[in-house]
Length: 491
Image (cartoon, rainbow, N blue to C red; front, top):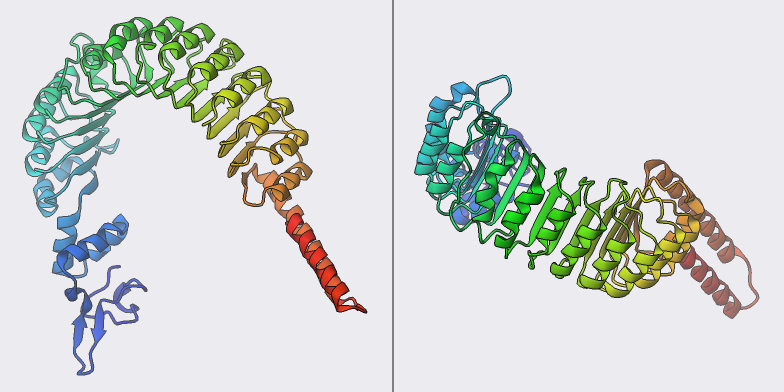
């Protein structure tokens, strides 16, 4: 969309113009008229808002008006920041006065943005609400503190692979009174300090995400001191989280979503989470010390779960007992993902009976989920809309049962299930015309070839039926009706 207003034609072919955009119209008197001038700036800005970043950049080169309108409407800007970019920051940010989201990426081979550059960002971006820092290794605690003073409107802060520590974060939390979301990943400054805690910030914090952090226990006061916290994500963070969750759980009365991944956590920590009565989404991934006793205690308190994802790591600590309790206590469950977990028909029958609102189900790498278990799902899960089965010992018999059940099923994904064949998949496809089936590439190719062959055979049968002579028009119509019915059932 980088056309020139002086050379573009109504065909959109000159000047590199987009083929579907007509900027200049040729009048009868021979003078060219810019059609975009008929649009108010607000309408032109709305058009730009629906374009990709690349197309917006091209549009800004068309004319001065388009440059001004595009600059005024730009809210998101992503920059790869080298050390020598600091002198250009005022020019860039003065052009985009209404920025609300900014991403600063520093390349590994360069020192990246300095404190002075970040302070300029805070000073010039008066409407900034969200900033993401990636690999900004030269920003210090003092630089982050000065940025926070200048950018008090900030609502979301995210940093990854940076070098500042708790002093900078505390300054950010203290100065940005509107801050609602904090994401910290690989913050190397914490490894060097390891003493000062990240203190209580504003009471507006709603989301905290901590990933790949040493000394993550330093965030305990922040988590416990955020009464409005809705989402907490803890992934690959050090420390004994049994004790830490016992400290913070009683304060998280409004917590609705919790992700626990690769933590030192046992049933003791899960029991503490039973106090989070508002919990609706729970993901437990690769936490091998958690088992049925902890989950049973958690489900007693968290009865409003809508989504539950668990990766049992094939440890054998989570099984039917915990899943039966889930089905008995959390009857409003809508989404269930079971990975490396051996569930049997005993628990799946209870799930199908009690969790009538279950819409999405995934079972992966289970040694016990076979045809009998799939038949339980087919008979009982009437609201099921999406189903994923990966690495499970099912066969064509299970697919036949599925074809006759789950009336609401719209999409199924089957991967790495060696017991199924093309014949079973054809049975499933022909029984459920609108069902979307996702398969391994090799199996999908065989299925497409088989369905194409059946369609060609059916088409040949129709042609022969139409060409065959008949002594009675009524008999001919009857034959065509029978062939049409056969094709409909086949396809």
